[in-house]
Image 1 (cartoon, rainbow, N blue to C red):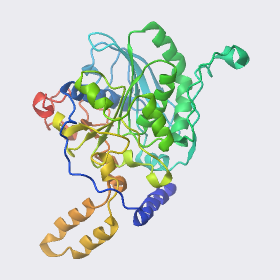
Image 2 (image 1 turned 90 degrees about the horizontal axis):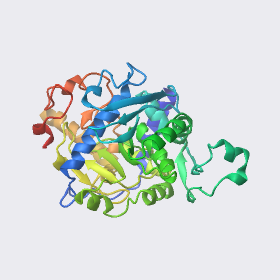
Image 3 (image 1 turned 90 degrees about the vertical axis):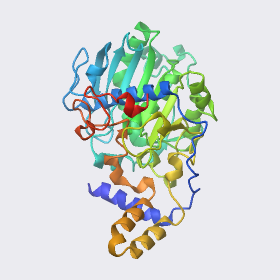
Image 4 (image 1 turned 60 degrees about the horizontal axis):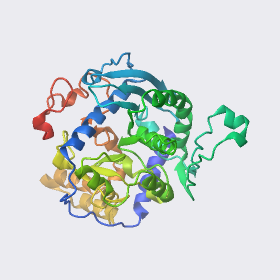
Length: 399
Protein backbone atom coordinates (compact mmCIF):
# COMPACT_ATOMS: atom_id res chain seq x y z
CA UNK A 1 0.00 0.00 0.00
CA UNK A 2 2.88 2.34 0.77
CA UNK A 3 4.37 1.64 -2.65
CA UNK A 4 1.03 2.31 -4.33
CA UNK A 5 0.78 5.63 -2.50
CA UNK A 6 4.30 6.53 -3.62
CA UNK A 7 3.37 5.83 -7.23
CA UNK A 8 0.26 7.98 -6.91
CA UNK A 9 2.34 10.86 -5.56
CA UNK A 10 4.80 10.36 -8.41
CA UNK A 11 1.97 10.77 -10.90
CA UNK A 12 0.81 13.95 -9.24
CA UNK A 13 4.38 15.24 -9.26
CA UNK A 14 4.72 14.49 -12.94
CA UNK A 15 1.57 16.49 -13.56
CA UNK A 16 3.36 19.73 -12.66
CA UNK A 17 5.93 19.21 -15.37
CA UNK A 18 4.10 17.37 -18.13
CA UNK A 19 4.58 18.91 -21.55
CA UNK A 20 1.47 20.45 -23.06
CA UNK A 21 -0.27 18.32 -25.64
CA UNK A 22 -2.88 18.98 -28.24
CA UNK A 23 -6.13 20.38 -26.88
CA UNK A 24 -9.03 18.00 -27.63
CA UNK A 25 -10.96 18.81 -30.77
CA UNK A 26 -14.64 19.68 -30.71
CA UNK A 27 -16.51 16.39 -30.36
CA UNK A 28 -17.76 15.55 -33.84
CA UNK A 29 -18.60 11.96 -34.74
CA UNK A 30 -19.82 12.64 -38.24
CA UNK A 31 -19.01 9.62 -40.40
CA UNK A 32 -17.50 7.69 -37.47
CA UNK A 33 -20.57 6.31 -35.69
CA UNK A 34 -20.69 2.56 -35.16
CA UNK A 35 -23.35 0.30 -36.62
CA UNK A 36 -26.23 -1.10 -34.60
CA UNK A 37 -24.86 -4.61 -35.13
CA UNK A 38 -21.48 -3.63 -33.70
CA UNK A 39 -23.16 -1.91 -30.74
CA UNK A 40 -25.11 -5.10 -29.96
CA UNK A 41 -21.94 -7.20 -30.30
CA UNK A 42 -19.97 -4.99 -27.91
CA UNK A 43 -22.80 -4.92 -25.37
CA UNK A 44 -22.97 -8.72 -25.39
CA UNK A 45 -19.21 -9.01 -24.93
CA UNK A 46 -19.38 -6.60 -21.98
CA UNK A 47 -21.76 -9.03 -20.26
CA UNK A 48 -19.53 -11.98 -21.15
CA UNK A 49 -16.45 -10.38 -19.60
CA UNK A 50 -18.48 -9.28 -16.57
CA UNK A 51 -19.09 -12.96 -15.81
CA UNK A 52 -15.32 -13.43 -15.44
CA UNK A 53 -15.55 -11.59 -12.12
CA UNK A 54 -17.32 -14.66 -10.73
CA UNK A 55 -14.05 -16.60 -11.04
CA UNK A 56 -12.27 -16.43 -7.71
CA UNK A 57 -15.44 -15.36 -5.88
CA UNK A 58 -18.67 -17.35 -6.16
CA UNK A 59 -17.46 -19.33 -9.18
CA UNK A 60 -18.85 -20.58 -12.50
CA UNK A 61 -20.28 -24.09 -12.68
CA UNK A 62 -20.94 -26.42 -15.61
CA UNK A 63 -22.68 -26.41 -17.98
CA UNK A 64 -22.67 -22.59 -17.60
CA UNK A 65 -24.14 -21.36 -14.34
CA UNK A 66 -23.19 -18.47 -12.07
CA UNK A 67 -24.68 -15.72 -9.91
CA UNK A 68 -24.17 -13.16 -12.65
CA UNK A 69 -25.39 -13.14 -16.26
CA UNK A 70 -24.82 -16.76 -17.28
CA UNK A 71 -28.53 -17.31 -17.87
CA UNK A 72 -28.37 -14.77 -20.73
CA UNK A 73 -26.32 -17.12 -22.90
CA UNK A 74 -28.14 -20.11 -24.35
CA UNK A 75 -25.80 -22.65 -25.88
CA UNK A 76 -22.75 -21.75 -23.76
CA UNK A 77 -20.68 -24.69 -22.48
CA UNK A 78 -18.04 -24.01 -19.83
CA UNK A 79 -14.70 -25.61 -20.65
CA UNK A 80 -12.59 -24.41 -17.74
CA UNK A 81 -11.72 -21.49 -15.48
CA UNK A 82 -8.26 -20.36 -14.39
CA UNK A 83 -7.00 -18.33 -11.47
CA UNK A 84 -3.27 -17.85 -10.91
CA UNK A 85 -3.63 -16.05 -7.57
CA UNK A 86 -3.70 -12.48 -6.17
CA UNK A 87 -0.12 -11.49 -7.02
CA UNK A 88 1.27 -8.85 -9.36
CA UNK A 89 1.23 -11.48 -12.12
CA UNK A 90 -2.35 -12.54 -11.36
CA UNK A 91 -4.52 -13.72 -14.21
CA UNK A 92 -8.08 -14.91 -13.99
CA UNK A 93 -10.84 -15.89 -16.39
CA UNK A 94 -12.72 -18.67 -18.15
CA UNK A 95 -12.96 -20.54 -21.43
CA UNK A 96 -16.37 -21.30 -22.88
CA UNK A 97 -17.74 -22.82 -26.09
CA UNK A 98 -20.56 -20.86 -27.67
CA UNK A 99 -22.73 -23.31 -29.59
CA UNK A 100 -25.76 -22.50 -31.80
CA UNK A 101 -28.17 -20.80 -31.47
CA UNK A 102 -25.43 -18.45 -30.22
CA UNK A 103 -22.66 -17.54 -32.67
CA UNK A 104 -20.18 -20.44 -32.86
CA UNK A 105 -17.16 -19.26 -30.87
CA UNK A 106 -14.34 -20.38 -28.62
CA UNK A 107 -14.36 -17.59 -26.03
CA UNK A 108 -11.62 -16.61 -23.61
CA UNK A 109 -12.72 -14.02 -21.05
CA UNK A 110 -9.94 -12.27 -19.11
CA UNK A 111 -10.85 -10.70 -15.77
CA UNK A 112 -9.37 -7.51 -14.36
CA UNK A 113 -7.18 -7.27 -11.29
CA UNK A 114 -8.13 -8.17 -7.72
CA UNK A 115 -7.96 -4.72 -6.18
CA UNK A 116 -7.51 -1.02 -6.80
CA UNK A 117 -4.18 -1.19 -4.95
CA UNK A 118 -2.95 -3.88 -7.33
CA UNK A 119 -4.09 -1.71 -10.23
CA UNK A 120 -1.91 1.18 -9.10
CA UNK A 121 1.09 -1.06 -8.45
CA UNK A 122 0.69 -3.05 -11.68
CA UNK A 123 0.52 0.08 -13.78
CA UNK A 124 3.81 1.31 -12.32
CA UNK A 125 5.89 -1.71 -13.36
CA UNK A 126 8.92 -1.04 -15.56
CA UNK A 127 9.04 -2.20 -19.19
CA UNK A 128 11.15 -5.06 -20.54
CA UNK A 129 12.15 -6.17 -24.01
CA UNK A 130 9.32 -7.78 -25.96
CA UNK A 131 10.29 -10.89 -27.89
CA UNK A 132 7.36 -12.72 -29.55
CA UNK A 133 6.99 -16.35 -28.57
CA UNK A 134 8.09 -18.81 -31.25
CA UNK A 135 5.06 -20.72 -32.45
CA UNK A 136 6.53 -24.10 -31.48
CA UNK A 137 8.37 -23.18 -28.29
CA UNK A 138 5.94 -25.32 -26.28
CA UNK A 139 6.40 -28.39 -28.48
CA UNK A 140 8.50 -31.05 -26.70
CA UNK A 141 10.00 -32.48 -29.88
CA UNK A 142 11.13 -29.02 -30.99
CA UNK A 143 12.72 -28.37 -27.59
CA UNK A 144 14.60 -31.69 -27.58
CA UNK A 145 15.61 -31.53 -31.24
CA UNK A 146 15.82 -27.91 -32.47
CA UNK A 147 16.70 -29.06 -36.01
CA UNK A 148 13.23 -30.64 -36.31
CA UNK A 149 11.54 -27.33 -35.67
CA UNK A 150 9.91 -25.75 -38.76
CA UNK A 151 10.45 -22.10 -39.57
CA UNK A 152 7.31 -20.71 -37.93
CA UNK A 153 8.75 -17.90 -35.85
CA UNK A 154 6.74 -14.65 -35.81
CA UNK A 155 8.20 -11.47 -37.33
CA UNK A 156 10.78 -9.68 -35.23
CA UNK A 157 9.47 -6.82 -33.10
CA UNK A 158 12.32 -4.33 -33.45
CA UNK A 159 13.03 -2.12 -30.41
CA UNK A 160 9.80 -3.27 -28.74
CA UNK A 161 9.31 -3.06 -24.99
CA UNK A 162 6.38 -4.41 -22.97
CA UNK A 163 5.03 -3.87 -19.46
CA UNK A 164 6.78 -6.60 -17.46
CA UNK A 165 3.78 -7.25 -15.19
CA UNK A 166 1.40 -7.81 -18.09
CA UNK A 167 3.95 -9.98 -19.88
CA UNK A 168 4.51 -12.09 -16.77
CA UNK A 169 0.74 -12.54 -16.42
CA UNK A 170 0.55 -13.86 -19.97
CA UNK A 171 3.59 -16.14 -19.50
CA UNK A 172 1.91 -17.72 -16.49
CA UNK A 173 -1.48 -17.99 -18.20
CA UNK A 174 -0.28 -19.40 -21.53
CA UNK A 175 1.04 -22.57 -19.89
CA UNK A 176 -2.50 -23.25 -18.66
CA UNK A 177 -4.39 -22.26 -21.80
CA UNK A 178 -2.32 -23.44 -24.76
CA UNK A 179 -2.95 -27.19 -24.33
CA UNK A 180 -6.69 -26.54 -23.97
CA UNK A 181 -6.86 -24.19 -26.94
CA UNK A 182 -4.89 -26.47 -29.24
CA UNK A 183 -7.45 -29.18 -28.59
CA UNK A 184 -10.45 -26.86 -29.04
CA UNK A 185 -9.15 -25.26 -32.25
CA UNK A 186 -8.65 -28.74 -33.70
CA UNK A 187 -12.08 -30.03 -32.61
CA UNK A 188 -14.02 -26.90 -33.64
CA UNK A 189 -12.25 -25.52 -36.73
CA UNK A 190 -15.26 -23.42 -37.79
CA UNK A 191 -15.65 -21.68 -34.41
CA UNK A 192 -14.30 -18.14 -34.17
CA UNK A 193 -11.58 -17.76 -31.51
CA UNK A 194 -12.80 -14.78 -29.49
CA UNK A 195 -10.88 -12.96 -26.76
CA UNK A 196 -12.46 -10.40 -24.44
CA UNK A 197 -10.84 -8.63 -21.49
CA UNK A 198 -11.55 -5.81 -19.07
CA UNK A 199 -8.96 -3.59 -17.42
CA UNK A 200 -5.67 -5.42 -16.84
CA UNK A 201 -7.35 -8.48 -18.34
CA UNK A 202 -7.49 -6.50 -21.57
CA UNK A 203 -3.70 -6.13 -21.52
CA UNK A 204 -3.21 -9.88 -21.06
CA UNK A 205 -5.74 -10.52 -23.84
CA UNK A 206 -3.75 -8.22 -26.16
CA UNK A 207 -0.53 -10.17 -25.61
CA UNK A 208 -2.38 -13.47 -26.00
CA UNK A 209 -3.91 -12.22 -29.23
CA UNK A 210 -0.49 -11.48 -30.74
CA UNK A 211 0.68 -15.03 -30.09
CA UNK A 212 -2.56 -16.60 -31.34
CA UNK A 213 -2.35 -14.47 -34.49
CA UNK A 214 1.14 -15.78 -35.24
CA UNK A 215 -0.11 -19.32 -34.65
CA UNK A 216 -2.61 -18.78 -37.45
CA UNK A 217 -5.66 -19.03 -35.21
CA UNK A 218 -7.17 -15.76 -36.53
CA UNK A 219 -8.43 -14.40 -33.17
CA UNK A 220 -10.95 -11.61 -32.75
CA UNK A 221 -10.25 -9.40 -29.74
CA UNK A 222 -12.35 -6.91 -27.81
CA UNK A 223 -11.02 -5.09 -24.75
CA UNK A 224 -12.69 -2.66 -22.39
CA UNK A 225 -10.53 -0.14 -20.51
CA UNK A 226 -7.28 -1.72 -21.73
CA UNK A 227 -4.13 -0.01 -20.38
CA UNK A 228 -1.09 0.73 -22.50
CA UNK A 229 0.93 -2.47 -22.88
CA UNK A 230 4.23 -1.18 -24.27
CA UNK A 231 6.13 1.40 -26.29
CA UNK A 232 5.40 2.90 -29.71
CA UNK A 233 7.24 0.11 -31.52
CA UNK A 234 5.05 -2.54 -29.88
CA UNK A 235 1.91 -0.51 -30.66
CA UNK A 236 2.93 -0.36 -34.33
CA UNK A 237 3.69 -4.09 -34.30
CA UNK A 238 0.18 -4.84 -33.01
CA UNK A 239 -1.38 -2.35 -35.45
CA UNK A 240 0.31 -4.14 -38.34
CA UNK A 241 -0.65 -7.62 -37.11
CA UNK A 242 -4.36 -6.75 -36.97
CA UNK A 243 -4.45 -4.19 -39.82
CA UNK A 244 -5.41 -1.36 -37.48
CA UNK A 245 -4.49 1.39 -39.91
CA UNK A 246 -6.30 4.49 -41.11
CA UNK A 247 -10.04 3.85 -41.55
CA UNK A 248 -9.90 0.06 -41.96
CA UNK A 249 -12.22 -0.57 -39.00
CA UNK A 250 -14.70 2.10 -40.08
CA UNK A 251 -14.95 0.65 -43.56
CA UNK A 252 -15.25 -2.90 -42.22
CA UNK A 253 -18.11 -1.88 -39.93
CA UNK A 254 -19.92 -0.09 -42.76
CA UNK A 255 -19.62 -3.19 -44.93
CA UNK A 256 -20.85 -5.49 -42.17
CA UNK A 257 -17.46 -7.14 -41.69
CA UNK A 258 -16.04 -7.87 -38.23
CA UNK A 259 -12.93 -5.94 -37.25
CA UNK A 260 -10.39 -8.23 -35.64
CA UNK A 261 -9.44 -5.89 -32.79
CA UNK A 262 -11.73 -3.47 -30.93
CA UNK A 263 -10.22 -1.46 -28.06
CA UNK A 264 -13.19 0.16 -26.29
CA UNK A 265 -12.51 3.22 -24.10
CA UNK A 266 -14.78 5.42 -22.00
CA UNK A 267 -14.64 9.13 -21.25
CA UNK A 268 -12.93 9.84 -17.88
CA UNK A 269 -11.48 6.32 -17.62
CA UNK A 270 -7.85 6.82 -16.53
CA UNK A 271 -6.62 3.29 -17.25
CA UNK A 272 -6.31 3.54 -21.09
CA UNK A 273 -3.96 6.50 -20.44
CA UNK A 274 -1.74 4.48 -18.09
CA UNK A 275 1.10 3.69 -17.65
CA UNK A 276 2.19 7.23 -18.39
CA UNK A 277 3.36 8.38 -21.80
CA UNK A 278 6.33 9.97 -20.04
CA UNK A 279 7.41 6.42 -19.13
CA UNK A 280 7.47 5.51 -22.84
CA UNK A 281 4.13 3.72 -22.99
CA UNK A 282 1.85 4.21 -26.00
CA UNK A 283 -1.68 3.26 -27.01
CA UNK A 284 -2.33 1.20 -30.12
CA UNK A 285 -5.07 1.69 -32.70
CA UNK A 286 -8.47 0.00 -33.01
CA UNK A 287 -10.16 2.33 -30.51
CA UNK A 288 -13.92 2.69 -30.15
CA UNK A 289 -14.76 5.58 -27.84
CA UNK A 290 -17.79 5.92 -25.54
CA UNK A 291 -18.31 9.66 -25.07
CA UNK A 292 -21.26 9.49 -22.66
CA UNK A 293 -20.23 9.48 -19.00
CA UNK A 294 -23.37 7.91 -17.54
CA UNK A 295 -24.95 4.50 -18.09
CA UNK A 296 -26.38 3.24 -20.33
CA UNK A 297 -24.86 4.44 -23.63
CA UNK A 298 -26.68 4.44 -26.95
CA UNK A 299 -25.21 3.73 -30.40
CA UNK A 300 -24.91 7.49 -30.97
CA UNK A 301 -22.53 7.70 -27.99
CA UNK A 302 -19.93 5.41 -29.60
CA UNK A 303 -17.55 6.27 -32.42
CA UNK A 304 -14.67 4.79 -34.35
CA UNK A 305 -11.32 6.46 -33.70
CA UNK A 306 -8.42 6.81 -36.12
CA UNK A 307 -4.81 5.97 -35.32
CA UNK A 308 -3.13 5.21 -32.02
CA UNK A 309 -4.13 8.38 -30.13
CA UNK A 310 -7.01 10.11 -31.86
CA UNK A 311 -7.38 13.56 -30.22
CA UNK A 312 -11.16 13.30 -30.61
CA UNK A 313 -11.20 10.20 -28.40
CA UNK A 314 -9.59 9.17 -25.10
CA UNK A 315 -6.19 10.48 -26.22
CA UNK A 316 -7.57 14.01 -26.34
CA UNK A 317 -8.35 13.92 -22.61
CA UNK A 318 -4.80 13.02 -21.56
CA UNK A 319 -3.67 16.48 -20.49
CA UNK A 320 -4.12 20.14 -21.27
CA UNK A 321 -1.91 23.17 -21.24
CA UNK A 322 -1.09 24.44 -17.73
CA UNK A 323 -3.94 22.47 -16.19
CA UNK A 324 -2.45 22.63 -12.68
CA UNK A 325 -2.16 26.40 -12.83
CA UNK A 326 -5.76 26.72 -13.99
CA UNK A 327 -6.88 24.23 -11.32
CA UNK A 328 -5.23 26.25 -8.54
CA UNK A 329 -6.56 29.50 -9.98
CA UNK A 330 -10.12 28.16 -10.06
CA UNK A 331 -9.81 26.88 -6.49
CA UNK A 332 -8.47 30.22 -5.23
CA UNK A 333 -11.24 32.19 -6.94
CA UNK A 334 -14.05 30.00 -5.56
CA UNK A 335 -16.09 31.82 -2.88
CA UNK A 336 -19.58 32.21 -1.43
CA UNK A 337 -22.52 30.41 -3.02
CA UNK A 338 -20.47 29.61 -6.09
CA UNK A 339 -17.80 27.69 -4.15
CA UNK A 340 -19.24 24.25 -4.79
CA UNK A 341 -19.85 24.89 -8.48
CA UNK A 342 -16.40 26.37 -8.88
CA UNK A 343 -14.88 23.42 -7.06
CA UNK A 344 -16.59 20.95 -9.38
CA UNK A 345 -15.35 22.90 -12.37
CA UNK A 346 -11.83 22.88 -10.94
CA UNK A 347 -11.86 19.11 -10.53
CA UNK A 348 -13.00 18.83 -14.16
CA UNK A 349 -9.75 20.53 -15.22
CA UNK A 350 -7.71 17.54 -14.00
CA UNK A 351 -6.73 15.33 -16.95
CA UNK A 352 -8.47 11.95 -17.08
CA UNK A 353 -5.27 10.01 -16.46
CA UNK A 354 -4.93 11.51 -12.96
CA UNK A 355 -8.55 10.94 -11.92
CA UNK A 356 -7.81 7.71 -10.07
CA UNK A 357 -11.14 7.84 -8.23
CA UNK A 358 -12.68 6.98 -11.63
CA UNK A 359 -11.27 3.46 -11.19
CA UNK A 360 -14.49 2.90 -9.23
CA UNK A 361 -16.78 4.47 -11.84
CA UNK A 362 -15.84 5.26 -15.45
CA UNK A 363 -13.33 2.41 -15.58
CA UNK A 364 -16.09 -0.05 -14.71
CA UNK A 365 -18.86 1.54 -16.79
CA UNK A 366 -18.77 -0.23 -20.14
CA UNK A 367 -22.41 -0.71 -21.16
CA UNK A 368 -22.90 -1.98 -17.60
CA UNK A 369 -21.09 -1.47 -14.32
CA UNK A 370 -18.65 -4.34 -14.52
CA UNK A 371 -16.95 -6.20 -11.71
CA UNK A 372 -19.72 -7.52 -9.45
CA UNK A 373 -20.78 -11.15 -9.65
CA UNK A 374 -24.44 -10.59 -8.75
CA UNK A 375 -27.63 -11.19 -10.76
CA UNK A 376 -28.15 -8.38 -13.24
CA UNK A 377 -24.88 -6.64 -12.38
CA UNK A 378 -24.56 -3.62 -10.10
CA UNK A 379 -27.84 -3.22 -8.10
CA UNK A 380 -27.42 0.56 -8.32
CA UNK A 381 -28.30 0.35 -12.03
CA UNK A 382 -31.16 -2.13 -11.94
CA UNK A 383 -33.71 0.65 -12.34
CA UNK A 384 -31.76 2.69 -14.89
CA UNK A 385 -33.18 1.59 -18.21
CA UNK A 386 -32.34 -2.11 -17.84
CA UNK A 387 -34.65 -5.10 -17.59
CA UNK A 388 -34.69 -7.68 -14.83
CA UNK A 389 -32.88 -10.30 -16.90
CA UNK A 390 -29.68 -8.26 -16.94
CA UNK A 391 -29.99 -6.88 -20.50
CA UNK A 392 -30.18 -3.34 -21.79
CA UNK A 393 -33.71 -2.55 -22.87
CA UNK A 394 -34.35 -1.39 -26.46
CA UNK A 395 -35.39 2.01 -25.17
CA UNK A 396 -32.21 2.54 -23.18
CA UNK A 397 -29.80 1.17 -25.78
CA UNK A 398 -31.33 2.81 -28.82
CA UNK A 399 -31.83 -0.53 -30.57
